[in-house]
Length: 188
Ligand code: URA
Image (cartoon, rainbow, N blue to C red; front, side):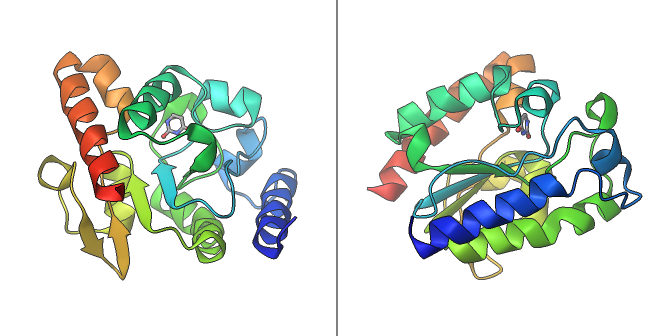
């Protein structure tokens, strides 16, 4: 195991061990388990969603539900293997009833994401949806920023609509597929 792989694995252990820390944050205390994320330390792309849902909470793995299946399709359209990408979330624990994470919860979990990014040093960070985008580029609007490279905060972003949004809005599906192909071109 390389040093970055070891550091990433140790960080994942630290995140999982946070369950039971009695930190007072509802998400940490009500989730089944924390979901650190998965993928290689050498990933060129890091995909960042908002927070685990019910399926992810049960499995301990990000994006394994319906939105995850569509994410797999999008990565295939971009010509990227899922296991070559690091996939995680801004918040590592499922909010009760899938409510939006609260700002203090995001702040509580943010250092873990920063540390993951510091270890991986991706070429491109793909925030999914307006909530994840807002964490990296507070002034950007997903409707304008999606499907293209955006430099923000010293990072190279490639924002996409959240794949879950396409499950409720069929019109977004075609846009997401088009954007995924553009992601593939940006990586070429
Ligand atoms: N939606 C997210 O934002 N993250 C997941 O892991 C699953 C669904």
